[in-house]
Length: 194
Image (cartoon, rainbow, N blue to C red):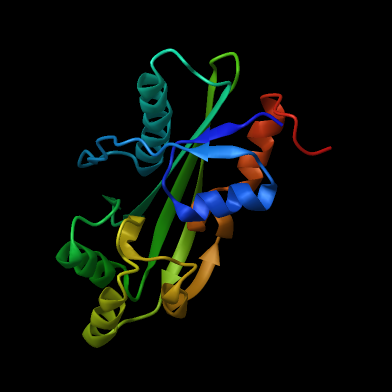
């Protein structure tokens, strides 16, 4: 199988690539992840995924490999999009808004094939959070798990204690919609699966 550049520093996405047995290298690009107020959550996640691929292409300066994958996750509640928190205070504010209610987790994945075509798809899932006291939020903030993750929580970590339900794709909530990613590999001719 041909190697894929994973345009992401996400350990969760790396774990999914290992699970699939895909040869890959990591090249997390620094892009502007500022979310425009009123932006569509799905479009925001898709745009960031494609931007990551384009940034890797720019960094490689013409030495572009056949396959590049970018992905991004955003959280949406009350028509407001939440990405990664800026700091502990921002993380606490996000958790306060999410607790005791449902929110949408949108994960987009983009794949650049050898012909230079970028295929991009996104998946929306609904996550239900338990009610949290200020003390519980402080406890979670003290763990540091909120750093560098959309919505300020890791569903596959200690925050799983707070999740009362998921409607949709569990793998997309973690960071990579596996069913869609597999379909993209097959559609774009990557030699994987049957």
